[in-house]
Image (spheres, rainbow, N blue to C red):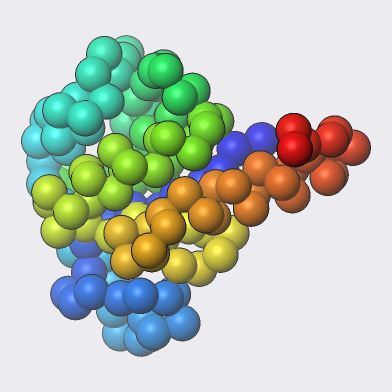
Length: 137
């Protein structure tokens, strides 16, 4: 199981998925090489043995970066298996490049939230409940 975050670039900034109109679509974010370089700036040692699938393992856990098949790239899906500390570099990645990171379970955008890791923490609590695990106090 992973916490999934959809990253793309829109024509304007949104705070919730409900604001996105039917006429909106993801804009080109950059070439595959540019996107991989942008990710590497904040997620060092991301492996790209498959050019559409980057694998990062760091101190907070792991992230899979699934790039769209388009070049230029128009979206990235992040499959996060990490602790709350991973939210800050995801937000920084988006702020540096004018992208938005949508928490797919909450419909909110991480870079617009006062506590960007809140969605991940809620997802981890839900996962623990589903798996019948107790959370640490």
